[in-house]
Image 1: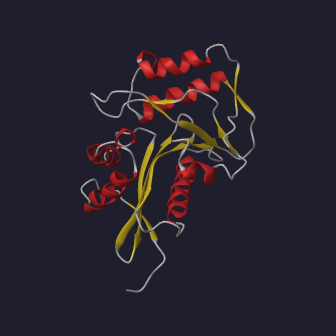
Image 2 (image 1 turned 60 degrees about the vertical axis):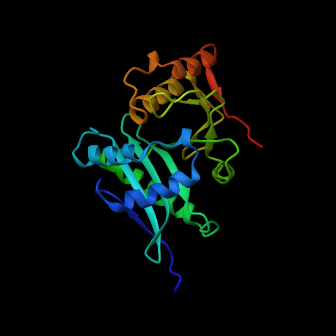
Length: 229
């Protein structure tokens, strides 16, 4: 079989068989408590297709090598922040070390920039993401000095009904300058948008995980950059 450079494609059809194939990679690579069920992906694609995301956008990208799917990434453009949010990134076992994850992420970021332009902004304001502190991808991301890691007790809310426990993750922001701190007011706005737009929690202030985050920063005027070794 001839090796070919992976192609990056976007899934827009909520009935595409590629969703199931890509989800198998996500399922094998991401912990259960960090990934949504496959029904979430198909529903969000249907919502995007039928215009129910208002001014937000949703993207589901895959990489393909020799006709086989080798990786997947999903993300949202949050219009009220003019920021992209990277949701899931997974590369098939045996396909690591080929730059597939980087190509997928670059493809998603390019779409976020287009979304920003479509919303009449001059330039995308930033790219958000959440990740486990031990994930090797975090170290790759942090090689960019313009990536700001929030020094907060960030909690991902449960992704399904009945799921117990709290998932502490690292929240980061990639922008076009190096920041040492962000006002707590702005951080609260970002957190509210994430919980409302990404996790479909209409009233974040009533959510226990969101309340825990706010309680941990309520006496701080600014949130500083977290140092990760």
